[in-house]
Length: 418
Image 1: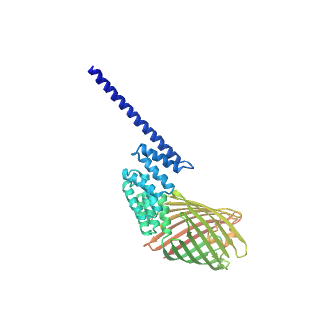
Image 2: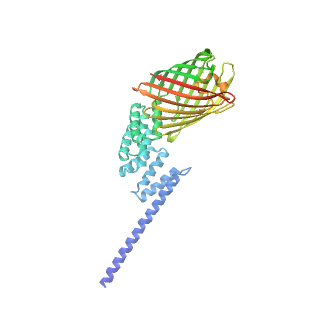
Image 3: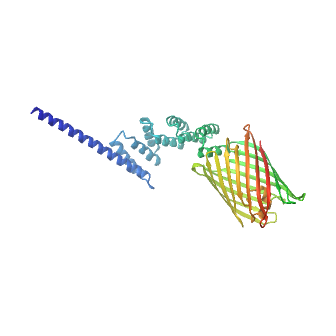
């Protein structure tokens, strides 16, 4: 009798255990399903943030230790701009379990949005300690310095990130943009000689001096150029050109290029005008769209539409640009390898057709636009003692001068900036 009673007790305990275990499993299934509903709605095209908050609050009540509900509460409150609640839940998740990377990222973004730069920097440093191989947190630290216009620390830490991620296109692009926004004033000189293997033609000389004023908003360049062209040992054309160039940084990832040049001498077009709009995409991509206008001394004019696409591949930059113009298109493929700063690189350039951006042949642009040409260039540029820039470029151009007849033009170009 006693054994039967003991057996009944054991059976009852087993049933209670099985029932409670099934209840726990059912509850976990219900909370998991509820969380999946919230996550799925967040990924939809028109998420219902307020309904998601109600779902997450229910999930938090059913499973108080399920931190994913707290994280989703923070995210949904964040997106409807209830920032105090969002901040509370992000901090709650981080305090309970700092292995939630998304909680760090969302809270850092919230601090940056609210201009809480000290808090953002402290939180970013903590995230970097926990996740040293996560590039995103390191870039967030750079964002803090960038938003504070602290270019010194921004450059310092970008270089340290570059050492850790040496072939990252996004980092190379950021470094290039940073160097472009550094305040500086410089003067430069440029000289190009073109030799031509056709009797009685050449050589052509082009020299210029410029002043470069570079600021965080962009750059302004003033340039004076002088050209002299010989034919059969006589001066065919000579004269001066006055030019202003500018790069203007607009919103994040966007900038514009403007160029205006004027001359009253036959060695140059009367007017050369240019505009391009550039946009930087993620993963090192850049695209540009622009127009060029050239008014010749004989009152004829030419218009060109240019389209370009560039990409960083680690320390390499490749750009393809097409000029859509009257009679014949022009194409240019440019590649660069940056081995230190923006000013330290090796370049190779290949092209077909006459480009409106080629200053050495601008005076003959209207005559060459319908003729074929095949060119290749190689150059080397170096920053010396963090102050002086020196470079040279050699170009070989097979230029058609009349139907199916070609001349070989060899350019030697030297320039320096102080």
